[in-house]
Every structure is written in C-alpha cells, then in structure tokens.
Image (cartoon, rainbow, N blue to C red; front, side):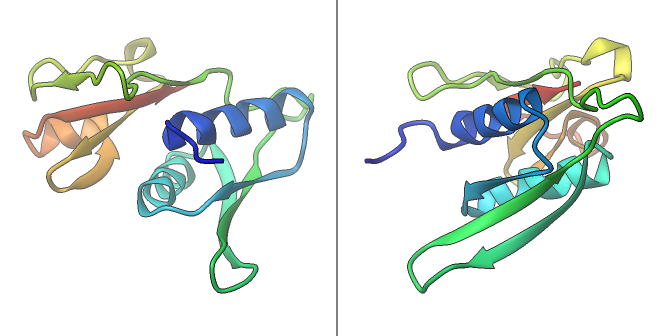
Length: 133
C-alpha cells in the first residue's frame, strides 16, 4: 500500500507515539524526512535519530522522542500544512511565525528543507510543509 502524503504520515506517527509515551518511533526513509528529523534534532524537539537498514529495500529512520520531567511530550503540536491536494507556498516575506517564535515552520526551499527562520535569513520562500511547537 502506498502512502499519498508521506510527510503527513511521518507527523502522524510522531504524534501517535507521543500520545502513548513511546520512547522512539520508526518512519520509512526518504531524504525529505531525514532533513525534517535533522531540523527537529537541531531545534531540540527530539533526542536523536538513526538511519536503519533492515534489508536492501527497506530503510527506516528511528526517531528518539523527548519528554519533560513530568512525562509531558516536548512536542505539543506537530501538523502538516501543505497537502497533495492543496500545496501551500509562501514568499520570503510571507513566512509566518509560529507562537511568536516559540515554534518552528518547516519549509522546503530551492536550497533544501529548512526552518522558517533560516528561510527568512536566506531570503528564500517555498512550500510550507508543517509546523511544530
């Protein structure tokens, strides 16, 4: 069975794993998902990620989730903005701020996948993939 929206599937897997307080979650590999995992790590929303090769055809990204001391998940909202039926593109001056800077946007630009803050800094627009806070 093929997945029509792999980014949204990744966000849903993370959201579901956080709701039942799993330590880690596995998502099928793609370069875009790996870039998103790198962004989540550098922004401090996850503890670690690891690329797993179960066999020659299937690769997975294992994401280690992060929780606060009272076992509340660090990620309260992770949602997809752009969808296959309705792509959402933003210009460099129209990139929205998430929770007044306490959250991040994930944007796919011509220079790769990056946060909204980095895209504003590099004067790049692109497809708004999702937001995390």
